[in-house]
Length: 118
Length: 111
Image 1 (cartoon, each protein chain N blue to C red):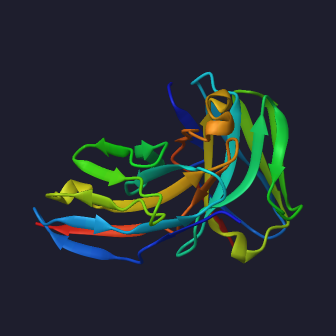
Image 2: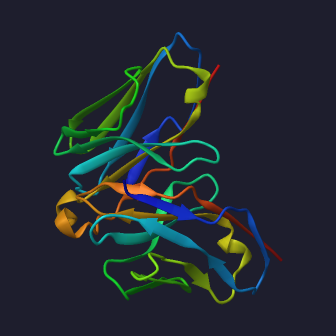
């Protein structure tokens, strides 16, 4: 497979469940991201990883726990979520080294995981 | 902080009509600017980009010019098709690999 693959595509969970979202990229990129897309709101950056190290946590509640075991895989562990956490969660990757001070960093996105919290 | 503002939608056009989606930004320094497109059921795809003032990005008949004096990056297409129906996001990248997106504009093209 090529590109960025996210699983599952759809997830329904109760507020007391524990689940995980998975993201995998086969592009040789060294930066990976989680974004949250809610209706009628701008995309919200949640986490950034560079070379497996977390470099950005955008004040995300602790009920979202990211994990990046290697440069190709990124997880988002979910527990004790709220109904307002229902959204499309998008994973992206980039060759972070091409950005730097010029800022011309191009992201490749997965198709997203549609999460519904009951 | 850095931010992007784009026109609210939905924008509804007939096939072959001219398209403009406005985008303005606020940023320190000299950001790179992007348009991403999201087709139904898919993730975002890069449509075009510009990295410095007066640059014009273009792809698939879409164009946008980086206007530093008006801090704008408006998206245009001379003749839209039904297949262009999607959500369009304006974005900027000013520091390192952090991308800031606008709220998105829904485009609906009728045949």
